[in-house]
Amino acid sequence: MKRGMFSVGVGIVLLLLLGDKVAAQGLADLVAEGATLTKLAGDFRFTEGPAVDKAGNLYFSDIPNQRIHKWSVDGKLSTVREMSGGANGLYFASNGDLYACEGTARRVTSMAPDGTVTVMASSFAGKKLNSPNDLWIDKKGGVYFTDPRYGNMENIE
Image (cartoon, rainbow, N blue to C red; front, side, top):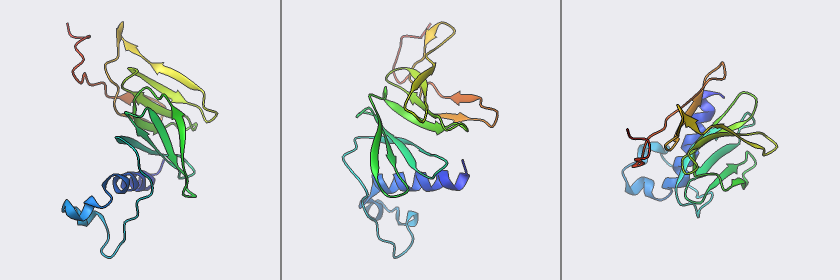
């Protein structure tokens, strides 16, 4: 994934989230002078995890609605996964699989282009994961993710 594509994806998600609030919040420097903001979609509860595939489509999660959405390069919004386990952080592997940190389901998964979901990690050292949040995949395919407790006291010794 090219760095610029990620920046564009983050920018689009910011505009989706901020919309009319940009000027009111003193964030006008995020938008070029004279540019007009257009709300592309709505009815999300809490979006996160922007990731862009090789074709330039933007994927993002709506955590409480348990969905992963895709904003396609041709300007269409679709839902690519329901019951996403509270997916948050997303990242594309070089083979095209979409990895997701599923905080509610307490696991990290990969979704193949055909929609098949595989659990990649759900525990460490015999204990369930807490709430996987964000992830990154290195050039050799190593997956790194954060696993904050977010109040979960189950794994406290």
